[in-house]
Length: 148
Image 1 (spheres, helix red, strand yellow):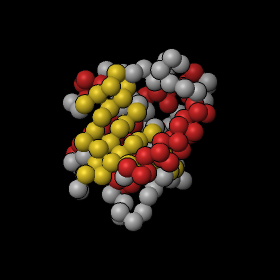
Image 2: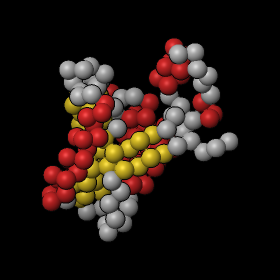
Image 3: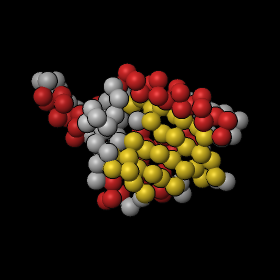
């Protein structure tokens, strides 16, 4: 998930990729509740009630290979800094979503949602990044489930 955000007084304009998945939906809700302006990228974004860009991020024609995403974020971070736009890359650990359950099931791996991060928790961590003091710039956020 890559977020691009520009500060406007006490709120941000935020671009959320993967906005219609389990994590993205929770994030869009948390961001709008916190007063931020959200542009959502994903499938069926009209149901989210925010400005949207339709894209199937699972379609290879829509999105570059996963390894290229880090390069894209690094490039955006460098290019947009002069314009006051921050780019923060989020690396979530196992998050309790239907998709993770399906993937683990397909590979015969156990899935315990209680051992995962809740989507709402991850969304709150991302909102926390947006509220970071102006003299700091969180470029990356890695969030792992707490040990049991």
